[in-house]
Length: 251
Image (cartoon, rainbow, N blue to C red; front, top):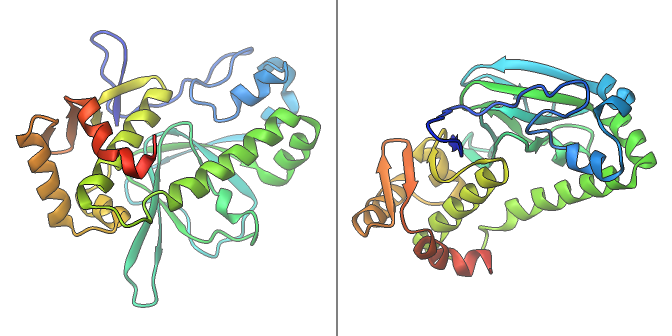
């Protein structure tokens, strides 16, 4: 995971605070949408009746499994969640990684069953929202409805981002740049992070061989772009990494 941008403060496993009577949790996935509608926490008693803090899930614990009935989405409060499916031969295919403030379960809305598995990569805490009641509330709050659509769009974008014919260097650079941005959006360091996902999981997600990921990381470290110490990673030259990811991210 990443480090908070506070001098001397290092938190290897970020977790939201619980807010107070008036303010939302620090990584609440829906606070911006609610606040944009003029609702603070004290005015959303009906919303917070829907919220259930669940966990901890330990490393390797499943949050849901493919085929389980869908009735709730969940926002990550702390830790990292991996989603994956198994193909007909039983081989695992990693679909994505979810950080604090990000929402899992959105891809289950259409079928009413979870189409993948979700597993904790470290100690995970969640906020679980009843989706039927969330949808009812969204119909009364256009800002929340737009936010749900945005989350769905982002989920689709993440799934298709690395599907093109890109080199291993471009894929890994794009992965690290996006991870950096996602941490920064949540108030953590954009340049120093702890990778809770294994090299094999990263390789699987990027559709690369694990030895290829290790080789690219070594080369980027030799070139002074990154500093890598096991799962601790520091981006030393963000501009160089961004240029390498340019064709994938198109920005």
